Length: 135
Image (cartoon, rainbow, N blue to C red; front, side, top):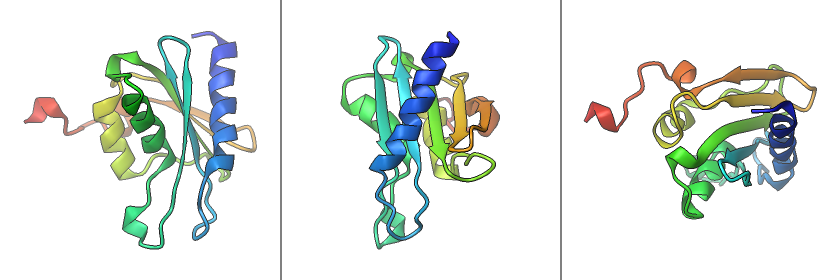
């Protein structure tokens, strides 16, 4: 994947932070998923006063891809943006969802508004993932 495509994906994730609804935590997270056909879909965290009903940005982006008709093999990369240093890593729930819904070696770019970047994969985030193969 070329650097220009990666940069576009990261910029899309940073822009998605503006879509965040986070009146309680004030912790804005944006995400963007890159698909094989070049489409980039955004997601952002959406909070709720009943905190358990909150949805993370990366899950929103991946769920949006699925709801648009894309599937696991269509997903090429994911970027997750935050304002914290170092860049935020996916929560446990997101790690489990990513391990099942995107290819296990998909590059995930964790970035922040300060220009920091960490590259990881679902395999690195959840090495002993419980997946459909576990059943």
